[in-house]
Each structure stands twice: as C-alpha cells, then as structure tokens.
Amino acid sequence: MTSNPRNLAIRRRSRVRAKLRRVAKSERPRLSVFRSGRHIYAQIIDDKQGCTLAAASSKDKEFKSGKGWNVDGASEVGKLIATRAKDAGVSDVVFDRGAYLFHGRVKALAEAARESGLNF
Image (cartoon, rainbow, N blue to C red; front, top):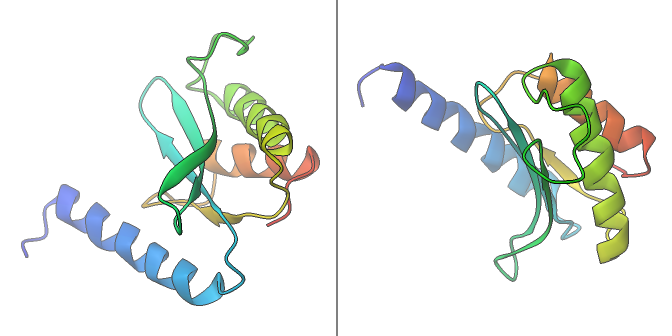
C-alpha cells in the first residue's frame, strides 16, 4: 500500500476500530464521528445489528448556530446526539474518532456529549 494521505487515513481508521473491538467487549454501540470542511456528523451505530440508532449533524434542522466548521458548532452537535441517544434508550457508548486526532472539533463534540449524559 502506498503512503498517500487517503491510504494513511484508512490505516489509522482501521487501527482505531481494531482497538475499539478489543475494548468494547461489553457490546456497547459505537459513537462514530465524521468531519468535513464545513460540517460535522455523529452517529450511534449498533455493529451487532448493523443499524444506526441515532444521528446528528450540523445540517439538521435543530442545529442552531449555523456554523458546523467551528468548535461551538461541534459542541452543539455533541449535545444534540446525546439527547437523541437518550431518546433511543442508549446511555453507554464507545467513542470512535475515526482517523481524526482527538482535539479541536472532535474533542468538543465528545466533551459536550459527555456533559449531556453519554458515558464513554
């Protein structure tokens, strides 16, 4: 495999997911984060059944700030995913940061979700 940025991201993502599989033996759903240049997305995924239990993004109608590309918007999405997870009956999750470093928008989303009641 060549070392272009896309392949490196795939390798990082699969490394993180492999660690999650070892840690998440309690069969908890996964809180997966994806960030683009303008928006940030979060999903709670049940890998056992292969379905999405809850989702939130900066493109949703309930999203208030209008700026998904900054830390404030990411923290708002974190609060939104936590409330939707509670509505779906999920309180414990495993955080999947994907190929992204745990800082900036990803960290803001995680901390806001924790403050709003998700355990991970």
